[in-house]
Image (cartoon, rainbow, N blue to C red; front, side, top):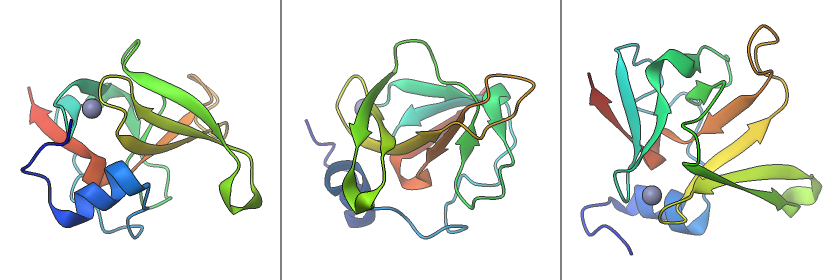
Length: 121
Ligand SMILES: [Zn+2]
């Protein structure tokens, strides 16, 4: 279930689990109100009110839309991390870490901008 309109870079992230260069993503500095969709299947994954500035160089969210994300333990690179994928199409999004904002969920969903499209409200 690959969207034929994806760029080569988007396919590398979504299907080969590549990671985009930090601070390179088109959606990193978007602050408009709206929803972030899976770039492959267009399912809504994140809401703009959960986006925050993590300083990591990747779009970061402290929560996801209920049921939109699957979580898988990833032991590549010699680290135990939790990979996040689109629950609808299985596209790779990034990872979730437990160093997010303490006043909300404490989670940081670290997402490749290439995996996302933005739908302005
Ligand atoms: Zn998807």
